[in-house]
Image 1 (cartoon, rainbow, N blue to C red):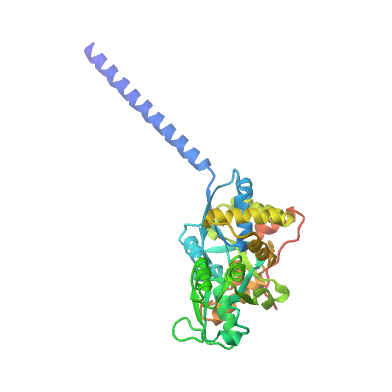
Image 2: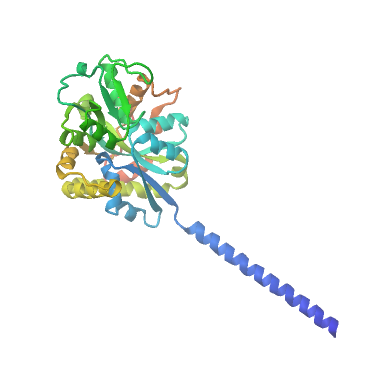
Length: 357
């Protein structure tokens, strides 16, 4: 009898252990299922520049959040210039970002065409060379110091290429006819006011701020250097792996992007106020209303990434020694399939990828 009770106790113990194990397994499976059902994160980058107005407006007005609802959890990161954003994207710390053409090209070539894709355009125009009032022409820049936002960035390449076209020797190291100083835009404004630098090739709103707050004048409006004044200043790029794994998220993001641009074009004054509020949230200070209004007038918001101008920017970067293509076809950077699908869905013409003849 005692033996039977012992056997019974042993069997009950086994049953209890089995039940607990089964319950834990079910809980574990349930947790795993819940985790797999959760929408992925989308880490989106942009800059506190007016040329990134679509991104700032989309975040501030909740346009992106609404479009991404149920598709992704939006996280945002801000950068001063393109090379820093590319470093974050290449390291896997960033999934998508608004950015200028040259840093995107650099990241694409560095990864042998594997790391990223341009999926949509954002802004054309909005960059200028602003100088001190006494400089009347290019030749007077000889021996002067000019700033750009960051070495290898879009405005850095534009300035170096333009100086070279004017016959100046501009080296990355060693003696140059004109000294190019890459630095943060806020530092550029401060140094320009104190005349420690003689000018800068910068995006908006910094070009306008150098004029209105720094007493400068526009020597070169970059629009004057391009056919019909159209060239890519900002476009939207995505980490290629993320695009392959989460096309539905990028589809929603592009929908949000198109919605944001539609609202910006429909109500520019309200959009300017929203963008100014976003810049203040990032930098801690609003821009003067006149500054943002004047900066706005120098830009065109477009979903067309203007591929022909990107090819020219790549050529310029090669010429000034900031890029080696090593046989990489830069037009391979574009993946506009989702953009064109969403455009057709809105009864808009699709965008073609081609270089300028």
